[in-house]
Length: 81
Image (tube, rainbow, N blue to C red):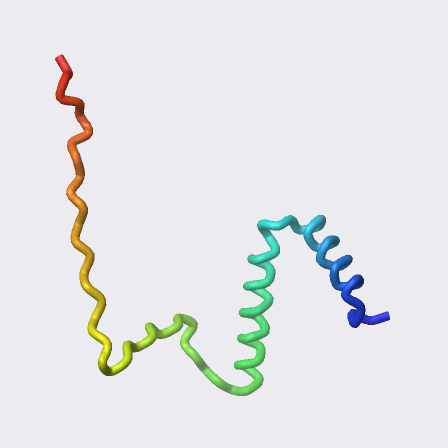
């Protein structure tokens, strides 16, 4: 009578979709995951910054080229008058 049967898990997913809707489920999952992560960090006594650091490039990798600005065209038609 546990969640070992895939039919039970599918049934729960359908119920969750009906109750919360497809748009809210990712938000709920993210908030649940971040809450569990914070709880785990508080138990372990770790303190990490909430913003992830930018991954560093390998030693031989060149930096990414800067994007050139795209010139904007004039939006006024030439045949006005």
